[in-house]
Length: 233
Image (tube, rainbow, N blue to C red; front, side, top):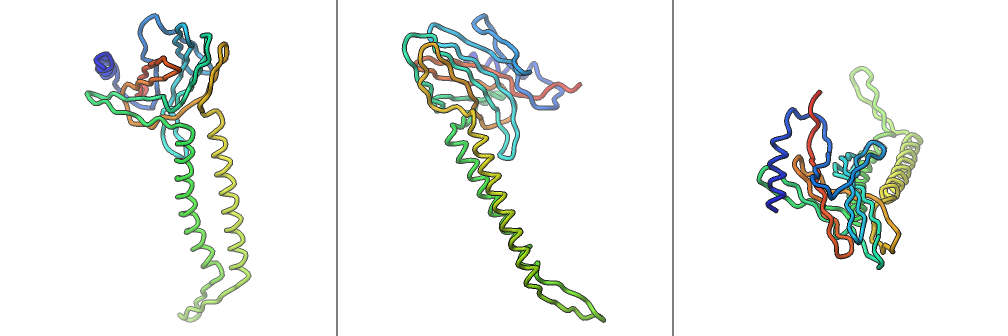
């Protein structure tokens, strides 16, 4: 913990003139290897049991803002190991404050998506229903008098259009859920000589130093990243 606090202080001495959000590596020592893949910096740690690689980057979509981490785990031991995403933890240090971050498992992230989609469908349904309900009515003004007429055909067409839109919306949302699940890390047994890769989302909580701890079998691997904003150019 003392080492983590000293890194936080170093981060605030290093950062100024902020603009766009970015996540950059904060790792020191000879126990790591790094490489660039498709514009993202990967860092690797290896011992007699595993090779664990990680990269991190900010993500913003219809469901919120996240720190997204991509992981690579390879078993170089002689026995199978178990990787459980529920054993991944993270915390963010900012100033003298350290807060635990929510690391979403696939099931938790899917539930969050469902809650957001449910709210969106309710709000859209209310707005569309009000619009369709008034579609059959029209008002004209003659000599200062208002005359309202009702056209059942127009109302029927409006209700059909709303039904089609709701069906398309639900279809798009279900497709979006499936896309978000592709590649999301799940619990796996990793056999000797084999590896797994995928990503996880971590709830965004502002600037600071993020420490991600990954438990693989009985071994823990810790990675530290600067979460902040790029210097203005």
